[in-house]
Image (cartoon, rainbow, N blue to C red; front, side, top):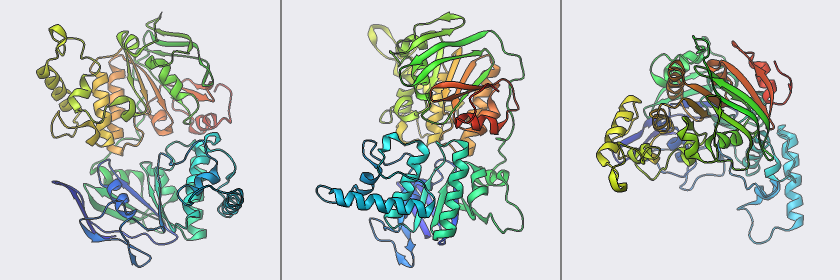
Length: 496
């Protein structure tokens, strides 16, 4: 890529970006949310033309519409769950009915490629039966099967267990070293950069502000250095943020909570001024737990208690009215309406009460705007105005809007699910500090997360979910990362 510029109106997203990725190299690309990474990847895959500059692949200028030599493996997999692996490979590559002979030939090709790369895969398995790690391997194999010589991996470890992370990073290095594949690794996990990358580039404000070798460099590169390059200042994510005061009265308690096929007899407790983390790999019951505490699991059994009294958890309003605030795992499908303005999104929890509500069912636009301006200023949301559409915000600022709405109601119990997923270093630091501040004010916080760094930095206690059951508990920090990671992967089903 040479001299890439791209603007959207007056917003200059990329400014004179030049970088190159060699065959057989792992190139890590870092940057805050809104730094220009997504736009750069869209240009690389031919989905978006640059305003100026050029892209070359193996010496040839990239044509409009992309090049089969470049493939993007998205964080959210592009697979059809009800189809087999082989059927997914054939999607868009055949016309009419796929014959049994063609399907069997494709299965054989997949098996051979899986053996060659070490990316184990059953080509006849239905995607919906595969684990997250297995689906990740399917996506990479599909790109290689198409003939890709360059892979763009977007947060490939976001939903993997710790053991799976190291295995995937080893396979990524092997693909580069043994098959000569050029790999762009987009991640917010700086330790992964040091483990897997040969070189790293950092985007900030649409410019490539740093580029340096990771391996064979005279001076070792550190995560602190990379974080400083990304944000432009020192970042304190490595600091343990345990509570400084003993926990207070019991505020949230789940007793024998079950959801058919998803949760099994879950019991846990959170006290005032305490942050309890529920650790687990995605797909092990966390979504069902969030549903129960959000009032969205009508088939749940067991008891949910707030301030030592059993509550009606049958509707979101019933849960909210007893002082429970929910920050959902999916900020866009459950936390925000992307097509509505920020001020409208900030009003959805409180439009029925004063000062937003007026007589005869009318709303006070001035009160809605004033509340939005107050929250936007307090949380430093980067937006042109309260009428800015929520869907135009970066992930970090969208999360600030969700947090602002929930925290403005001063909930006694705060349930936060995957609060920093997809966020950059600076946004992650902000979210962590915000949670610590509200814990110090006496809030009881239940953190549902698959991020070990987040868990070990914030938690006062850790509960591990595996296949919908509590399989391990860790009562106080500093925590043993390996033990928690083993429990998350199902290798330790005993209390620590």
